[in-house]
Length: 303
Image 1 (cartoon, rainbow, N blue to C red):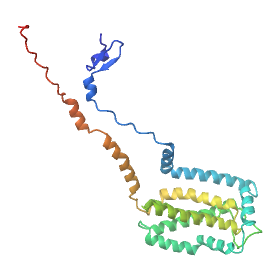
Image 2 (image 1 turned 90 degrees about the horizontal axis):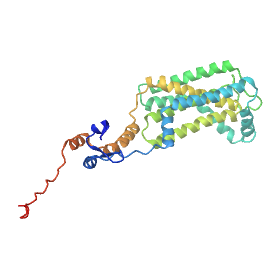
Image 3 (image 1 turned 180 degrees about the vertical axis):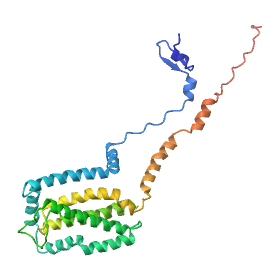
Image 4 (image 1 turned 30 degrees about the horizontal axis):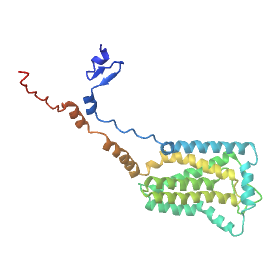
């Protein structure tokens, strides 16, 4: 006796053990299922997460490091990081030929080189006013640096300076300016440059400039290592805000070919394996060709 579930399915019959057995002809006409896609590896998922939420990740990491350094600076005279940097850089790396090199490197964050870079950006970068975008970034970062210096009131290291500097020490102004200015250039390059090799090369170059400017401040004895790292962290948080809110007002929205090509490459295999809905509907609506039953001839005995 068939159940109510089997009554609604005319292509199913009830077997002796209570299992449904589908019509073999209907099962033969059914299209095979689509191939099951492989599970995305965790590296691809992690890369996609970092790409989609890079601002949040950068801000969280920078704030964690900044708060840890600021806590040590406010409640102790010397941070362990500063002792290690003094022992490694000041005592073991200072040489007569390296000192003028570090003096030239630290001047990359001086007003004159930055003004030249602003002119180059204004002449060649895309957008309505890219030069104004970088100039406003510099002005706001310098103002933020002066505000933080007057809040913390940390004196500069004394006794091993190679050049003269005035003002407070925390955070490093050169480190903040270099990270904010050259970091904004890196963001613009990744936003508008289509050649992946050029993006990587320019990013490595500007990243090396940022690191060398901060290292030169420790080498010349005008900043503690904690001042430099804190300056980098503050500028990273600032860049996450500036590139999200202010920079799009000056720069056009890029036509990113990477995303479109990746999307097309992901959709193409699906279109190749997915059956056409119109053909699938027509196949289900047509009745399969069944050969007619052969006619049996009457024999003399049957007559």
